[in-house]
Structures are given as C-alpha cells and as structure tokens.
Length: 310
Figure 1 (cartoon, helix red, strand yellow):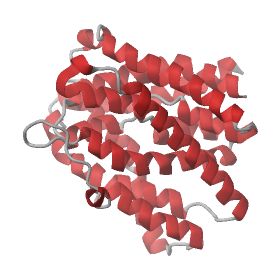
Figure 2 (cartoon, rainbow, N blue to C red; figure 1 turned 90 degrees about the vertical axis):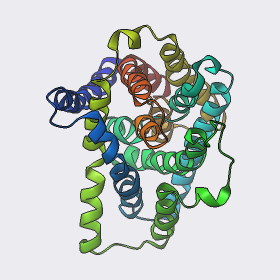
Figure 3 (cartoon, one colour; figure 1 turned 90 degrees about the horizontal axis):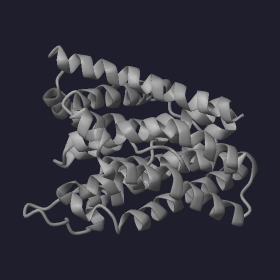
C-alpha cells in the first residue's frame, strides 16, 4: 500500500513537472517569458480561479448526508490552515519581505492538483467529494486571510484587515455565489456549465506553465541550500499533518473521510503561492523555488501520512 501510494503521488508530481518543463523551455526559447507570465497572472486570478470554485459547487449533488460530510471535511480543512497559521507565525522573521511567502507556503496546500487527483486514485468519487470540500475551504480562507497576509501597503507595512475588501476578492465572490447554488441543487444550463468547465480546466496547465517561467529565472543551487524551504517542508509535510491526524482521530473521524482529510492536510505548498506572489509584488522566484522543492519532497511524505490514516 505504501509503495502504491508513493507511486500515485510521484505520478502526480511528474505530470506537474512536465507542465513546468513546458514553461521552463518556453522561457529559455523566449516563446513565453516570465514577464509575459506576470502580465497574464490576472487571467488566473480573476477568471480561471473563480471558474474552478464555481465548477466545484455546481458539479456536486446536494443531499443531507453529503452536506454533513461536506461540512465536516470543510471544517477539517479550515482547521488545518489555522494550525498552519499558528505554527508558521514564529518563524521566517529573518526573511524580510519574503516572510509572507514562506508563511503562506506553510499554511496553504496544493488542494486542486495534488489532493484531488490522489483522492480520485486512492478513494474514488467519494474521496474526491470530500477533498472538494477542502478546495472550497482553501479558496474561502486563501482569498480572505491569504490576501491579507500577502498584501502590503505603500510603506511596506502589513495592510489593515478590512472585512469589506475581503468580499470584493474573486475567490470569495465565487464562494458566495456557488454555495447557495449547491444548497439549492441548482443545475446550470449547458451554455453556462460548459464554458465554466473549460475555464476551470485551464487552471493547472496555466499555473504550471507560468510556474515554469519563474523557475527558469531562479538560482537552482541557492534553492537547494535554502534552509527556510526545508523548514517549510518540515512544518507543512510532517508536523502539521501529524497534529491534524491526532485531532481527526480524537474527534472520531474515520474511514474514507479520515483518509481524504489527511490527503488534504499533507499536500505540499499551493501553486497559488506563486500566483499570489506575482499579484502582490512579492518575489515569484522565492515562491517558485519553495513550491518546487516542497512538492518534490512531498512524494516521500504524502504516502506515509496516507498510510497512517488508512
């Protein structure tokens, strides 16, 4: 089982890196460069990501049992991110303006690309359903706390937390639209559902190609010797999943739901780390090297955590 889980995790990472390689080579050949990717980042932020969120809501059928399980999985995912906030807070003070990037990479996991495909491979449709709740939680928290964490005022100080501004972000607007549609069991007509599905399908390839252009301009040697990235890996891939496993079991969560929650809790740093770095004028090279190395290390850690939950 361990080797099977490792193979599935490795396969997802390999697929990810093939897409990254496309971006890397495109940048080196000057076909699609880092500067172009940064200019295109708003397409992901304002169009593609909201489509992913809305699509996750309208593709699920509402029942009371599913709603309860969905709520539990949602709260488990939120709990994981809160634990990440607590444990990342004391660290990375020596990283200066990059501190927010390191903290963000500890708190937010790669729910859409790593968690969902692994859940599909290991648990089937039921696992995907539970992990979809994690995607909803991720987008809700990421586009509230995450926006606040990564945003800066003109003088370099942390932007003030303004509740009204949170509800103006595309991710939260999408959740506020999608949740009532899910509860009401509304089915979108094909003329609306199809374009949403097409847009949502662009998320992984675009994010990874953009990511590849950033990697092409990153010092790989410095990445391998960055102690901060290894600290991110320990917190994100080992400490936090262990803590969450204890919490889940103490709450009586078991079976497929437990395994799905652990897949989400043990996922590597989110691709959104790079997207948010580009959006809020942080170093995309720092964000890229964190996501790249932590994703690679997760090939070893995710199967171990999944086996503990099985």
